[in-house]
Length: 147
Image (cartoon, rainbow, N blue to C red; front, side, top):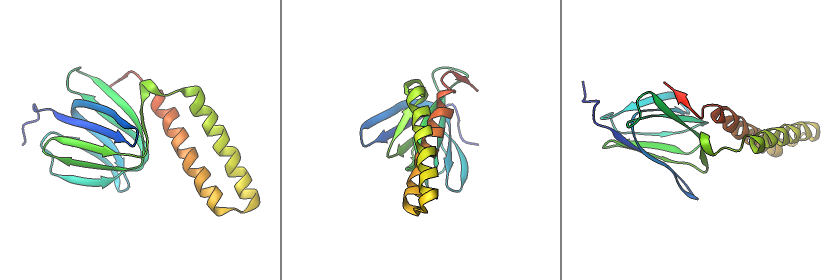
C-alpha cells in the first residue's frame, strides 16, 4: 500500500483566479462517471466533473473538511497534485446563501416560463442555473464540516 502520510496539494482554479490551494489527505469529487476519492500517491487520472461539491479533508487540521461548490470543469491528479479547473467555484465560507436562494427561485421561474413557451434552449440553461444554485445552497450548509 502507498504511503498515505505524505500530503497532496489541492488547487481549484477558475477564470477569476485561485479559489482553493491547500494540502490534503483526501479529496472526494463527483465526476460524470460517479464519485471519486483520491488520496496521496493515487494513480494519475483526468476526469470531467459534474456540478456538485468537492470535499477536501485537510492535512493540517484533523477531522476538518472543506466544502467547495464546483460548477463543472475537470480534475487532474498527478504527482500528488490535484488540479481542478472550473468555470466557477466557491468555498462554503464564501457563499452568500441569500443570493443563492434568490438564484434558485429565479431559475425555477425561468424553467416554468421555458416549459410554457416550449423553449428547449432556455429550459436547458435554466436547469443548469438551478443545479448551480442548489449546489451552492447545499455546500453552504457544510461550512464547518467534520469527517
